[in-house]
Length: 325
Ligand code: CP
Image (cartoon, rainbow, N blue to C red; front, top):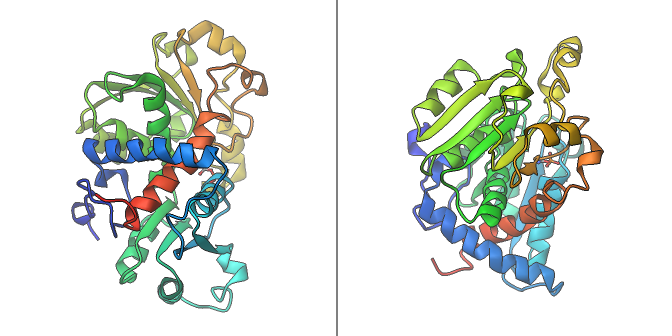
């Protein structure tokens, strides 16, 4: 399906596939964020709601995951729903015996009300949506392309802190080429006015020319920088990312570029502003020093993690039609 035919949310999430941040508009994000706040209250009470009672959601993960899988599973259970959990279907489902992607989607659709899918192929969530006849598909990461629910929680985390998503200055560091969270985050920030994002990456891991040109046509200013010394001192957020080892065909190439830019207390002292928050979609594998963890503005193991469950609770409640829209 072409990008133009992606189902736009336009304030009505019910039955929609969630494949890309391109489906969102500001009003839909505001609706989601308002509900996310309520979901946080439900989760904090440790008393499961019955909002998704009777619903079953399949979590079909062809790639490893801790946060996306765990927070979707927890979100469904927080709301009284149930899961069918297929981790590593290449080894633990009939995919191992040669069952096709198409048949796999059709089979799991028959058991549930929605499918959350992570897959290494770009466009796989879109392909699943094209195959499924009634169950909404949620993209939990399709190769280096997009990771929309990660961007939703990232945007919510920034919004919670600054009470706005416009007129922001951000620094994104690490792997722009293969990192999917970055691409969804830029799409989201580009919906709002006057945002500027500085992109700090090794030369070989810059955004592709195509992605850079595509994003530049949007309402966002992107500035590629080459050194930590180019980081502006007035950024609202720093968003560090992991170099995506699993996308490299040659490990020597990975070794050359991994951890070129490491977030340390020294760098914070030299380049961060008094308000800058420190984010990372995780996992981290050396690009943030553990010494940064105790900084109260390091949100990657605090609100950014918790918000992942809250936003997925809200998203599922809306998609499954449990909230009046
Ligand atoms: N942020 C994220 O997608 O983490 P996982 O790969 O652990 O799900």
